[in-house]
Image (cartoon, rainbow, N blue to C red):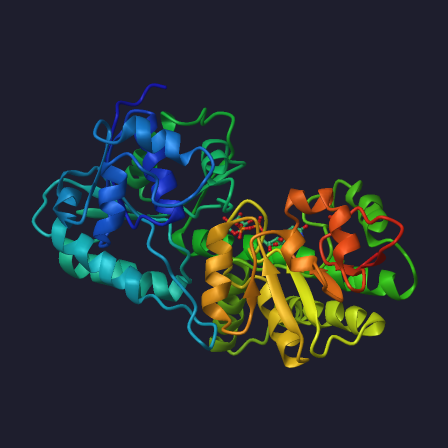
Length: 437
Ligand code: UGA
């Protein structure tokens, strides 16, 4: 650790921004977290994490009021050596990127930097398409703060943090991508920030241009989503032939070129990233008159998995006017985020069939979100309550507690369990179907 502490601003305090701000403050940088939401700012200043991420609360509690300060005022950017943009870039209806929040934040940054004479670096962490990078970041910044590469630098430094392990992923990255169009000051400044956090001789650092860095983020998420969809496609074939897709996955995962991660087949992927980024890549391709068949198929396979789950349920039981348990509402374990959770299409389909959907998730936040989303969903606070008298149970999220279910099966009216995540250890009395095994 050689570089002196830097003055860092982080604009946007979602799970990425808050994690980055807390981790950088923890290694001694003077960090200002900026958000337009006053309640988030108050929470951070009070030493409380505004979101749940393992390890984050401890980091914020130990740095708030010391190296970490939060504010709604963009003036703090004037004193920053480096400003990270970590604003959300959600999807529009047509899948294309909604860059309005990013554009607004960049304008605020540009205005704050307007009459600052020293070179300052703006680092884009938000996921943006190359053309949007120009229109939402480069142009608004340049028109306010001066020529890019002279008064102000712009680097694209995508994040690869997973929800639920964001702190660990930031502290222990498998690579750092810096897209800076050969602006050596930008590269040096960003390296100086990370130097206090990482041994930069052992973490691979890839220097690219800004457009390449933007696309590396999309390509990474799309590749991972495609890997899951491909194993799901193969898994569906396995199911038809009475073959266990997890054994097949183990067999192929031993090939170094394929690798074992992201080969868990089942009900598919959700969350705030894969659905948004695959859709944006398709929209971006089409805007350039290219139809990307692999990425479209990646999405299509994912959209079909919930229907396959319900077809298995239909095979064993008529759910009309009957309660059916939906076990797991969050898009994956370790989070209460229900965005694009596979539980959503499962519940929709169950309600369409006239069933009484009974949802349960260990996280209260996930339960509340689904309660708000579906008027007619019964949301209960235990797996036992969801399963009692139910004619079936669909397992949608691989929460570890579901592997402990046992006597709960006895309380079901019909013990039919369709497992979309290979988490259930079924007793012999249960009619058990794995989605791809
Ligand atoms: C994903 C990427 O993994 C991160 O690298 C990236 O930084 C992040 O998106 C982002 O763009 O911000 P995340 O959405 O938090 O992270 O979740 P993952 O752990 O990747 O899981 C995504 C979905 O795939 C989940 O629904 C999970 O259940 C599903 N999945 C994952 C499978 O169905 N099978 C697998 O083998 C792996």
